[in-house]
Image 1: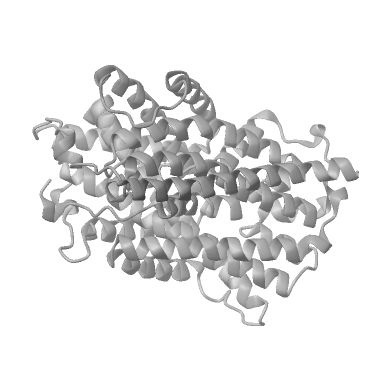
Image 2: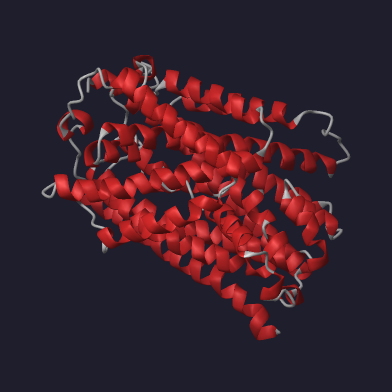
Length: 492
């Protein structure tokens, strides 16, 4: 790759975690994911724990592949080398649609919480179509990303820390309103039938999807052989922390007789508080944290990550070459970014978060299944490839993940499944008509990635220290967020 067309390595561990968590913690948790509390009550933690368990192994598998192949494009590049270009194309298209969908859904979620926020001040914004607010937000974040990865990376860190600051303040403020008795009385016989439970599990698992975001930006990560595996290992547990804590408070604050409101709500947390009469400051603080922290931290990588996929695929001639253009000053794939913005506008036009969520769920599950197959292919085709990090029992993990995700797909919403299959068919058709006529030679790692620098002794000491702090913080937060579910049992 020519130096002038090469992306800049500027993201460290903090930014990589921020990009990953930002993609994952947002629209799922604060919309259709939390709405499932209205259907399963306190049993939501069981589904959240299952979602964590079926996400850990894929994260570790991707950690190994990302450390070995730290380039833009994530699963697309892994499948290109481990399988073939057809499967790489299908994975790339599905990831692009899915993550753009996450960003589009997040802008609609922002519009809902933003409107409710202003309601608390007596200002009625309901006369404004939420899609208009969502589209304006996409435009703002397009500009942010066009300014360069350093700028958007620092902004991402700010969004994440702002979100957690508001979240902790909201948790502490709401403790006096907690009712531990709300955790009891919802017995297993009140749960929905099996098929519906599997659909609900899929929506809760969707709250974990998007962990590959940092992999897709591997070409812009400093010391990726260390940073990417560490970011993936930590992020999946930090996502559990966010889900477990917010779900605990939702169950503890909203009485079971109001579950019908939660199940139908577009903004379950705000609607739940309003149903319980907890209006004013509780709703204001909640909406500020979700809208200006959680939502913005998802929209930012929701634009940045798929643009890197498009850029990489264009360089490989699997998408039009114009998408491979890099801005000479900001070093961003500006044409790909603009295209992502246009697709966002189209998805926002549907106005349906649930449909977008289901399409995203189907596409990401399929993408990760292709990623697992690529992992097995890489081990067979490149047994001597340098692997700075190795996932424990990676082969078994791939098989378990593949079988698990295959079992989940039949329960996805029918329209979303059809949409996902159409995306796959179009990806294969595009390859057959346009891509296969180009030379399919796989570039060497040196050509595609360039030289990966090893940190100096001082730099290695610094990144190890940073990782240690993040690791112990993650362990403590995970124990606390899981442990609070025992409080109702002990006090009951």
